[in-house]
Structures are given as structure tokens and as C-alpha cells.
Image 1 (cartoon, rainbow, N blue to C red):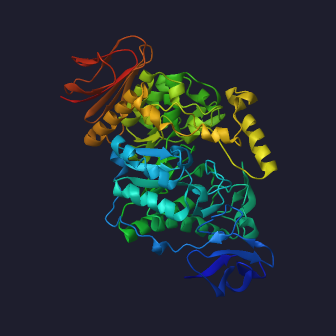
Image 2 (image 1 turned 180 degrees about the vertical axis):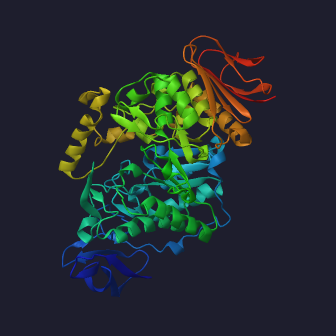
Image 3 (image 1 turned 30 degrees about the vertical axis):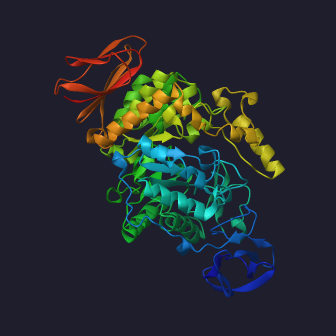
Length: 577
């Protein structure tokens, strides 16, 4: 049982509404109200009435069984029977992250249905699952980045107990679970927060309108809202970490940035629960301060996505140079730069942005950066959601996998990437408000005009077929060319797991020949040789050690003296002989 509490500093009267009963609440200071009469028990449906108005969902609702506009339902987190008391997540350095979307990962599209595919992920060798946003958002289907009830696992996915069952089952199989959280904006449908308190501020404006209030009047409690949300997922749902969406969209001029405050509190929770917890940020700022330790005047976030590596790899293998890819049109030299320096733009002038961009990471270990060929954004933000498998040959996909899984960063795969899934991953929504649905559909056709896509190429995000076609086809894993690509990924991940020289950590040194189109990534105790040519090439290795081929993507790769002979479009991982 729990006493109902809500922050509503501008209200003159607040009532706890349960069924038709309205229980007056008492002002207890700081804009908070508590109910002396109404007690919340597990399964109680309730809402809050402000100044005699309709019952609204709890801003911290733990469950919205009827969606964003329905009543909240109280959850007693102590009732769930966990079996993971001895669980400890593996370190990121030796790990492989696997991003997935609950609604399209399986035909069932629920937390429980995802459990049925966990053994595939164990066999693949990944260490961490990263769930796209799974809190309450409008409708039954969507990416989750327009969520409004941040404390409530999505009703269509299986609600609170469904998520707990998934996390518990993953831990039983040795898999850590991360959750993508969105703190930079709220969705446009079902966002009742501004009616309670100043969660937004007109002081700043973002692509979504008024900014989340992180440093204006009333921001202490708004920040507490996000911090408590982060701690809840890690504590009550036993999650092993969070991926924080688009932190570049935070507007926070406080002396202590929200990210730093969050990292401090998560570190304290880590000591309390006695298991490792991680925070991973998404940022397009190319600012290493985000992942620099606090004692070095950074924010202390554990790791960050590195889009420059993705962009350079994509351009090198596809030749696409439209939109933001224009900055990376040089291809191979930019790929080499990102492999060595993390950021291809670290103080250089960016033609796409029209200004200098980024800052050097200096001596930061590469464990603080994720490397990937694909993710939900880079696939879904295309006209028809094509994956790399629709844009590259099977040989090129093997080369890309080698650069991701044997490169210097913490590798991340997107669901189905391991077998070159033929199904697209499109942007889809399920807004029930007709005007909003129309605006989203029309806005989607205009969003990526810089890429040269015409309106008739863009699937309607509101069409249920757009969602259904994005579901994985698990049956194709056993057919070629998918089966061979799956085995290549398994072999790479197994070799990486068993070879500390392939773990993320020290910086790499890269040599390449732009004309001959070969590249060699040199790390302490390993070499990764890649040919991007359509002809056989001889790529030089340094003479400090004799090298032997540990894994090769094609027949005919051979060490010859201090060089390695490479067939067209191939990759080889070499270890000391």
C-alpha cells in the first residue's frame, strides 16, 4: 500500500480519483500534495483531479493499461518474484550490444514473445540487449520516442510484469538488458504534464516546441522527475543500464548538468544494489566531455554512440553522399580517421553544418564509444527503411561486420543484422487523433527532402502495413545468403569474446591506400585487414610480429611475408603466430 502523492504547485485543490470517489489531498509543501484518506494498493486504478477537473493520469504512473488517456494503475514492485540475485552484467569492453524493437522483434510483439528468441541471442554471442523505448506511448505500435508516461512500461508490450519477466529471463541466460529512455521531449498525444507543473519552459525552443525545463523556475522537481525515472528502471526493473536519447537536445545551463547529476546518482545506486550499471548517451555534438570522467571535469557517462564511424563506413561501402553523408564523401580516408580518432569531425569545418564541429577525444579509451553499421535511426530514417542488406553485397556486409566486431569500439548490432534481414525497418505510428495522424503522415514526406526522396516513396507511418512489414522474418535465417552471414557474425563474436586483443580499449592505428582501396587496423596484439577493391590486393602488415589468419571472410586470403594477400571485397582478422 502507498500514500498517493503528486506535484502540482499551481493547483488550489487536488483530488485523488478512484472510480467515482474523489478524495481531497493535502498540500504538504513544495507544490506537493498527499492523500490522507485514499491509499493505493496493487492493481488500484486512479487519477488526479486538479481544481475540480477531470481525472488525469498520474505524471509518475507505473502502469497505463488502457493507454495514454486512461486511468493509471498502481504497481507494488515488491510482488514480483525475481530469480537473479547473483546476476552481474558483463563489462562493455568485451561485450556486444544488440538493439531491438519489442513490437517488431517477434510476430507476437511483446516482452514475453521476445523471451522466446533469447536463446538465439545467446547462440549469437551478444552480451547486452538494448530495448528501444518501451514506456507508454500513443496507440499500440510506434518507435516509442513520443512517449509521455515515462514510468509505465507500454501496455501493448505486456506492462510492468511483462518487462520484468523479460529482464529476469535474460539474466538467467547471461544477457544484460539496457533500456532506451527519452528525456529531451515528450510526445504530442497524451502529455498531461504541463497541466500539473512547469515541466516545459518557453525560455528555450526545440524542434518539438517548448524545451523540457532543466534550468528554469521549478526545474528542481523536473530534474528530480527524470532522475527518479532513471533510478526506477535500474532498481525496480533490474535493468543493467540506460541509453539516453539525443542528449544534444537537452538545454541545461545549470552549473551541474543533468547528465553529470544522473551519473552521480546511478553510481550511488550501483553501490547500493551491488551490481554494475551503465549509462550510454546518444549525442551528435562530438563532445568527449559527455564521457570524460568527472574527476577530469566531464559528465561521467560510461559510453556514447559514435555516428561518425557509422557515416564513414556507410559512405565507404555504398557511395551515398546525400544529406549529412556529404561531409563524409571522401570515403576511405574518413573511415580511417574515424577508426583512429573516433570523431571524423573533431574541430574540422563541416560543410553540412556550415561551421567547425566537434573536439578531439585525446586519450579516452575506446570503451567509451559504440561502433555500428546500423541502428534504428540510420535504417528507419530512410524513405523506405532499407537495411544495409538492401544496399550492399553479401561480401560488403561481411567486411562491415569485421570492422564493427573486430574494430576498436564497443560493437552494436541492430535486430536481424546478423543474418542480413531482408525486412525493412520503417518509421511507424498509431496516433488516434485524426489531425495529429495527418500531420505526422504529411511531415514524414517532407522530413528528408535533402536526401532527394520524393513524397510518393515514403510509406505512411500511420498505415498498419508500414509496421507489419518491419517485423523480422525469422525463417530466413536458414536460407542463403542469410545463413552464411549469420555464421560469419557468430564466428566474429566468438573470436572477439575469446581474444582480449580484440576488446574495446586502446586506440587503433590505421594505414590505408585510397587508390588500391585497402585498409589495415593495427591494435595491440591484433590486425584487421580489409580490401574494398574489386581486384586482388596485397596489404602490408608491420614486421614486428609474424601474423597468422584467425578468421577470414573469403577463400584465398594468405599472409605473404610482411603483407597479406586479399581477394576483392574481403576481410581478415590476424593474430600473432
